[in-house]
Length: 591
Image 1: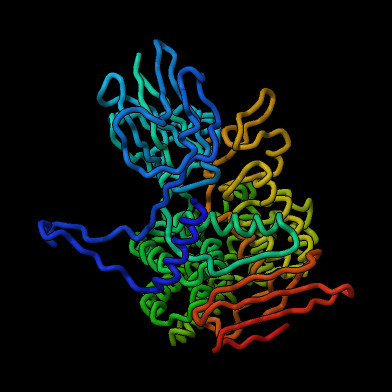
Image 2 (image 1 turned 120 degrees about the vertical axis):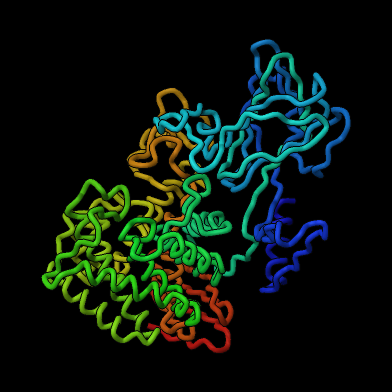
């Protein structure tokens, strides 16, 4: 039933096209006193897929009814309902699994309570079984404890008798319900999750002869889809805000899966409003560099010069800001704090090399943006700053993040970067955010097979632990003795959620749905399907597949002119035969 609803919702989005629904406001409201924005997101009611646990069978009876699809309507009495009882100190508790990570809340449809009236319950949302059963630490961020940072996930509240109520707005897969008080009874008719999501079709697709890679591609796509709320967030549980650096892998995924979506424009605009020049975006100089890179790649996909022109002042002003921070000898003082990603921070020398490479990459894209805007003086300024920076090329100090950026920016031969640093130990020291750029460096070095193997091992390692979305942080070493997130942790096993996470995300504060981890999705579209945009607006596309050990691969890619379809089949002699179907107006070239 849920699959049918999702298909109908996506079909409705396709049929609706770009037509906006009329908003009708009851005439009793004055326009000046009402926020007339409508909710641009859709809602699905999803019943639990399984009952994970109850405190005692005698205290939670007829629980299986909660697995059924309902109608959302309370009924008088207690017929065909799950009954929960407290008896003295014995509390009725139930743990529900909704099958995969969701964004939204919980709806409870209730029958009569005893004593009749409101009853007190505790609701705990969790991205893992352990988090749903954890205690709240009051914000002290201790390992093994949960937090209510950015979204309430541990809530004590009253629920009605013979009524319904909706609770929560967070990222979760599991919900634990505890009936509080003494000698109390509630009857639950339904307990669906309320999934709040952007109702858009998956125009891009990927399928190949390896089901594991198919799962990884779709998991990355779904991770970003959940984060496409009113704005493009980094995580649906935490932080739920716009971070420009995090946005780069997310925007890459959006281009590969959804094509153009207004959430990108809105989020870039919001960030610039929140951090006007001369501030750095998000207060981080590296994230202002990502702004230039995102703007150029977003333009190349959509070809929207009018949007770029609206950002002319910010683009040129940012370049002026950078220019004043780099002297003639290539010394730069953009900011005291250097940030690539959290796992790289202890390697200060490596971070410095990577930071300068990121700046060089951004300046290269900045020059292209200025050429498009007919800002020849600022284009020349970008090239001059980059030239000064190259007077001092730092060494990556065996940091994979730095070597990857240097390879992408042309400051280090990709073959050397991979042979000496990125390929060493395979997936060891990969990170969820910068793993995308490590994969890009491997592609530049022609190491497509190794990249596929690392995707299977590293991102597949999260799937092996029960992930249905990709995480903020992951280290393969964590998995050696870890239990899956979708089960209770046995004695002697590590808790993959509660026991791990460093820097700003220890324990359950760690986000298990983080858009910056979606890199394999656009990477496989770009390098396995081989789809590369050569001209703005996707008017010229190169198709150059790299199958590695795959027997075949096929998929679609959304463009402003329509959807491209490609299929590649490897013959017995190793040659690949490709089929490409492109809309009118798109020129397709090979190699």
